[in-house]
Image (tube, rainbow, N blue to C red; front, side, top):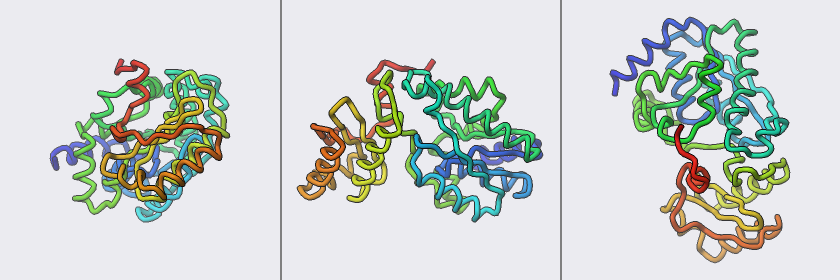
Length: 271
């Protein structure tokens, strides 16, 4: 495992000056840490995009860690829903969204005189449906974690070894993953999902997905957390907030949370 970390540092050192696409999650936090170790904090800029499609808590978490590492941190706004392909929740929405965000990141990098823009994909992402990877390749964005052969498990273990508390942060995804493909997305719909997930989190689960199917909501949490939600007080509260937002049916998925569930239901596979 440490050999992979040494390989990562070898990949980063010739890059001179970089801008890291930084969400504050486990993968991008580890990448930012490694970039600082390889290049020095004066040669690293972290950049975090905020938008209605992303959980607001991401920016706060990212700002805290960037401050702890002492790196320059840019927070900027994007509006992915201004793109028809994204607002229509097309199957290739991630391609258009990533291209939009990486264009902005490259602009930021130019102003900072950063030679490369880095993103935090790992080898496990190669097995999933990721249309955004096409945008990464087209725009010349670097993926050092993947290049060094690091898996999600490697990143978690190395984060712990390096003293980072971010290794255990569960993966996040944009709120568009809560809706079936080809469903028109509005800020109002996203706000309903955000409200429901925040209520669910208040009962203990950290990893939450509120999948929306018309007037029905399916709540997904890790299996170990399902018991927290089926208690009378919790379920009644969750059912109440869903009803207040116009949803007539609420279910707690007995199979628990699984990444890429919407892609599986729509037959999307790695291409």
